[in-house]
Image (cartoon, rainbow, N blue to C red; front, side, top):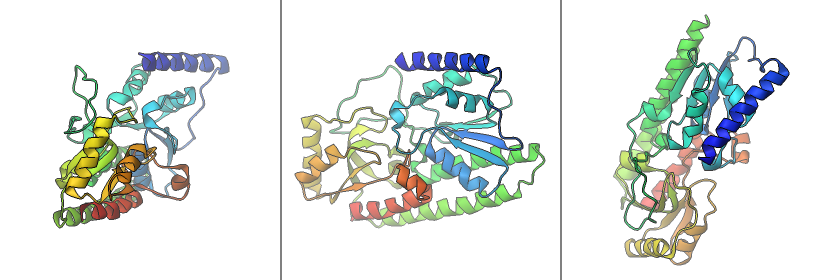
Length: 316
């Protein structure tokens, strides 16, 4: 309820600002505007656009920010209202998006919900996981891009919109088609590398001392997992029973690595490692990245390549 009220307030603030200024901030002349809520969408679009100056690309969730507590600013709402292509995740955490889209004229806007590009799977509570409050409706895992196969499907959907907009504006779309094919080839190589590692691994089990935003990844490569919380959980503190279960699992199966996702406080993972011989390692869900990583040019491919080494260490 508080989230909905915040969005209503922000929309009201936007209308107030527009009425005071007499006009809205115009789009950059001659450019097609693309607004993305999270980093994966931004990076897929960036890879398709390449060095072209025909597009103005914006990322709403700033590097280093926590997506579960994100609230749009009036500036964000203006950018969404004025954009030509809008890309968002499409899950329960995007209720604010649906409120905004319902309040604006989006007839000329191309809108992509990444969860609509793939077969979504429900969140699940596996053995040992801390009990969550049960919702009346099923919750779907929003981290659809963690599987490179899904990333390819999402990239194709984004590419279609970019190509269509380019052609509508009388621009040559061949560059975007070529960039898409090159990027899809990289995603295919990434997928094959993960398959080689998982197919030849000593074990098929991973342990997460945190949220588990990798259901799509685990499903794709046939991995079993144990974790403190589901991927979309807002919790960060595990109870003693959950920690004890994960410690016993690591010890009994001699699991060499305990994972945590990016921007984690690592508290649960480190606690488990202190009681076992396991090593803590980060596994990038690519939901977001640090400011230094962003400024240093990190992207989905480089972050997932880091995951290759981490997964290999955990399964062997």
